[in-house]
Length: 289
Image (cartoon, rainbow, N blue to C red):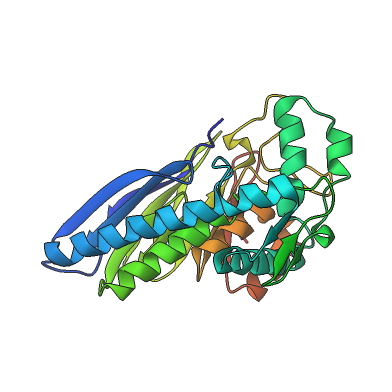
């Protein structure tokens, strides 16, 4: 079950007159990753190599499919000693987003997701959800008995940010990184926004910011539940939410949580997180939040 995407590049009109463009894509973290780089070929080739190395390193931390990853080992044992700093950084941001969204962003929904996907006991799995069961220190990360984490709503954004940082370290000033979420070095880059039911409804222009889109209807679990699950038991409010933010990790997490958030509350969250969003109603209307 692979989630459909609803952001696409309309135009890569970076402010890089005369600079050659290099583009490459591969599969990373379960999705297609693409980089569009502007600069001398020798520079972009070196930057591209370092960027893919960084993606491989990040996958070893956050993959749910690699039993040797840090996250998979944490989920299997309920405890991970000497956690990698990347995991601690993402868990700290997850905690911030959990608080900011009133608990709607909660990576402990993994057992609930698996119950919906595999015909398990949904109510029993729901009782395992709770961010208060997660404790993270440099010495160890621990989970309450029976808990497991999914960081799919933030790890791809984090990886996008890390890759963008590597490209900047290599001297690039114009680039667009796409790993489900987008982050721009300079710009402008124009992206089309689509909804699973209503098609293309708008566009976003990025300059030194990040963008993420989430649609509950982008993937349906085998029991008919939307793949974005409300940890508090409510259903989605919006058909699609697109968020722009200073980082892809924040845009990623907010776009997920705001699918479950009424407009008035969403506006307060966005203001506190220096983010902006548009939302598509179930009827197909496009609103600015």
